[in-house]
Length: 613
Image 1 (cartoon, rainbow, N blue to C red):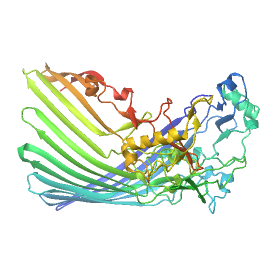
Image 2: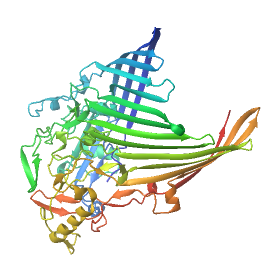
Image 3: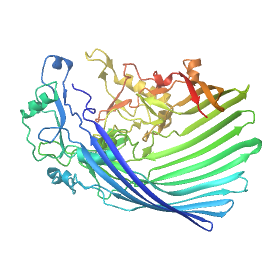
Image 4: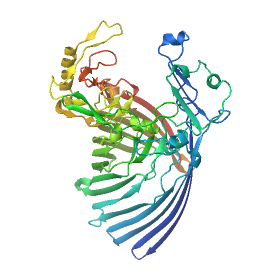
């Protein structure tokens, strides 16, 4: 009971100032560029989870009867007047770069350069939480005031363009180099907001700590503190954000190679390959979690690591789970291969066709503006999120086709009409209301007990490998889903699913499963009227755009598919399983259903535009 817990007091503001000075000069075949850049950023983040307070009741009946809540949460500032405390920090970066563009001959040009970047992090001496600093996490202690060391980043790059025949008929181009990115500032500023120094986060399920109900913030705070709040030394926060002192900005080593050709009949052809290697990728580790020291046997061929506890508690007796921002391993990458054909006719017709195959492997999908969310959201794993297992990127379509055809005709001196049709096809579908190109099969629960995302599923090799148990389908316990029915239904589900059927006896990898192909045609028509205004030709343009034309022609075309369940099994941890039903209670018999949402329907947009010459 309470308002949206993530909106009250929410503020995100970044001010950036950049000054750049560059020098250009030439010497023979060399064209040099040298530059210096200073960047100043100031980030302000007002984030008070449950800043207006919230109550959790065991049932609607308890709330209506005025019974006491079963849980309570609030975040408030540590100021004497309890007014909001915004987290602020400033960040500076100094950069210097040098580039040489060399025209070795009229047909071959090479560009080489190097960039130096020196990030300067803020000092957070006033953000030190003493109680947290004294806690022991295995052999380590951490601090809420730690910032990364200032480390110079060096990014060399080189590229070339070779006109083989000198007439741009055959061109080879490419390059390789290191490019440095950024850590989200909202993650850095959360080291301040989550330290309990400027504000206190209070959550409890303990009955005698839950204040009496009030429907106003002042009333809640009065019920907690009796009308008088006295700031005191903060206790250790339950979920602080901390940063590794050895943290480096994430970088990508990017390499491209492309071939452009003019084929017979005026067809332009391009073939391009791209490979990115992640250097120092960012990962989040829950250092409050003790390493797994035992295992859990889910079935005869499925044994997992098991996490059993936390290192430390604060003075209020609550587990402390710091989320450490650090650099991960070197196994993340991305590559793509693209081919494109283009043709323009002299009578106004043009067409293009492009295909791209791409694969990405990463330590996570980068979901979550909160560090704790980035640790647990979609980080499906076999043996726990802290293991930083590499998986496929759900945001990269393994195959994509884009094709278009258009025609434009001017006539009657004052008119022009144009029409175009665009096709796009790729594996793309929905889980809930979120779209993905790939997805994972997981258990419906977290079987390793690390408190993160659910764990990746093991696909049994045979029908009899898993042991199912009966469970009730209704609260009144009148309809039972028997173990025999579940075993039969689950195996039928496996055999109708292309992926599961092919991977019997294997563990599913994160985002290994393709979504079904989605095919969409978009139509556009524009009518131009040329107007002579003051001796110049202006244009009045009327247009109509139809998105998802196929769905306009037939309501069963152009529909996205939705995964009925990515978590069909519940592992009870004692060697038994339960086969899930769909949300509406129906048996789970098919992998996909139609996504009946606005995104699947057609839309028509009319436009009018006046273009000045």
